[in-house]
Image 1 (spheres, helix red, strand yellow):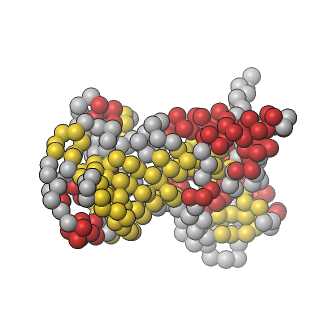
Image 2 (tube, rainbow, N blue to C red):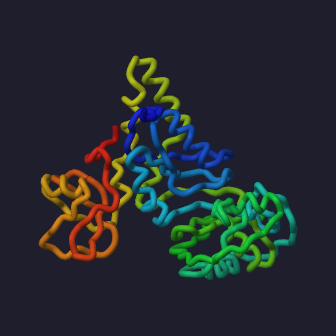
Length: 316
């Protein structure tokens, strides 16, 4: 007998404003519980210290999480100068204290050096895995393991505030996927000769998603209470907050099929079109409705890459 999934089928993307002090997975599980959703996943972990945008993909939207993982991010970060920690943030232990003798001009000059492409070694306190185990678990055991450097791109890094009295710096960073802000702050501190660590980190944007679409766990809980008081189902208010799953695919080329072609595509059959298909992932619509992503096969025809199980876009 097939095992029934706990929860209800929910499809869509929630822009959760993760609170400080909990892991991204705990925030995910709380949101999943509030929605009573069968399936959910997040798209890019934030440290417990960090707050801000954590897209939660429910149901069918989990098939497209990679597109959000691969997109650029924007952060507001505040750093303490003069102290270096084991984790490059305030959750770690201070391992070195130095005097701070810098000017705003010097600070801006050093910040500008981070712009553009560079190689970055992931922090030992990251969630990346080595031999199936997250790096941060090795770090907590005092073990350092090999890490591969990765290509990153800092599109912009601006100085928002230099609080000389408290030796604190606030910056806004627009970066490519996989960029560790803690590492940038640590490197900046070393370049300045005084050391530095992150004391506040807020992710304000993931790709094109705007900050004003974020909602907190407290807001979700309040909607549950409101629905109960009005004797409505919780989904009445909660599901209105979900964004269509294909919003994760902004920027992909789009191919529109007829209803009949869409049916063939959804059943795994290659669709012959009289257009030349581009390389890479393609957003596919049928009769104006999103039905998944496709790609060009060796014969130049459109084949399914990620299709929807229910063959239709839904947010409920």
